[in-house]
Image 1 (tube, rainbow, N blue to C red):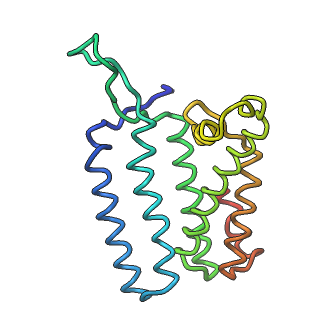
Image 2 (image 1 turned 90 degrees about the vertical axis):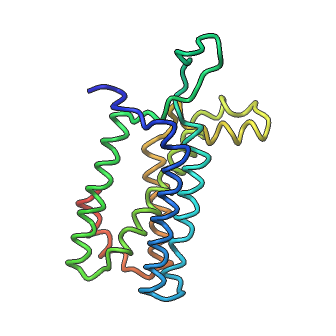
Length: 198
């Protein structure tokens, strides 16, 4: 398998992707407000919406691959696009399949799919935070001599690797536990639902 499957063009990331996210997100928010009213159920989508927009606007352009333009070989490097790597793509497929299995099993056990999706979101976010935090702790000698702003920037720079599986397990266990506690979902029932998907 190729390391890079394809590139998402810079022109698509710079414009249409953000507008599509804003339009679809607004539609989802309106639907949630129509279905649940102005409640915590519908307002819980807003952080996801804002984080998604910030990722598209700030994080994705920073992750783009750059190359020298054929028109101006002596000029600066120009953004080519976002590289879609084979490993990350397969990991995304595994995540979608696992969440899909959990939604199916959740319906059988009487838990609404939106709650499973919310749980999956918080598991993924807290897992990534835990994985990076564990890497930073493990490799502290590389980070200890940096100035505070430089340290903060290098802690969030994951383009060269730096995620540890053990940290993701610990982080997602903490994040999932907090979500289950705050939402009042039964822990053992949700564990039964999520186990095959994991």
